[in-house]
Length: 211
Image 1 (cartoon, rainbow, N blue to C red):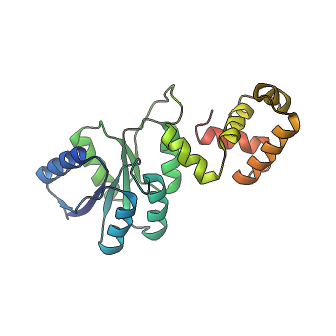
Image 2 (image 1 turned 180 degrees about the vertical axis):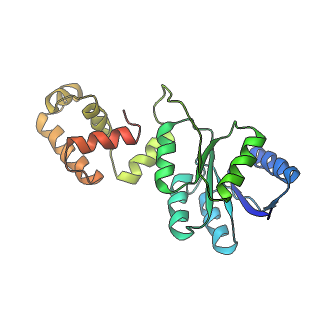
Image 3 (image 1 turned 120 degrees about the vertical axis):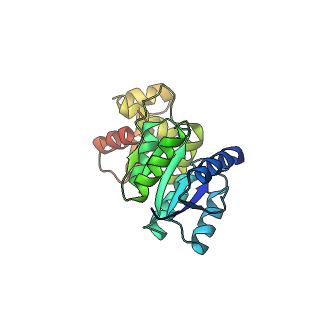
């Protein structure tokens, strides 16, 4: 079995040290110097061949979501395993859509991690079965989500209300704004999300875990 050139991208040194230790013990890996943020990850990829990346989502400077988008565009052959604490089905759907090859929670066992790395390196995919939680999308990712689609907090609020099947009049009443203003927000939302109607907004909201 050939050695895999593996790169860890994470900003928690204790976790990095633990993973390096278990992967060294397992053998079969060329372990590259880890990176602690998204920018450093892209710089590393520009200079060093990599087979598999273990990618954290919450990193400084350039988060894992945006790094994933860039990596998939610039280095389509690199295999990417998202390794995170976030037990959120909408994040699984998002990273899968962006081209990740796997999604694994950080509480996975050492044997499972090694199995998943090999499976992904061999061309497979592995997406952990995560259960829906009562908590909304973590605020960090909600902020990044809003930046990505150029949405305001008010527009996200209206998307959720549309998903609850409220009319423009009912939304206006709850938010203390006019029905005309709600409809203006709806038009802006449809333009930003590139959808044509309310059904498109509903589909977007369900897909991205806003409901």
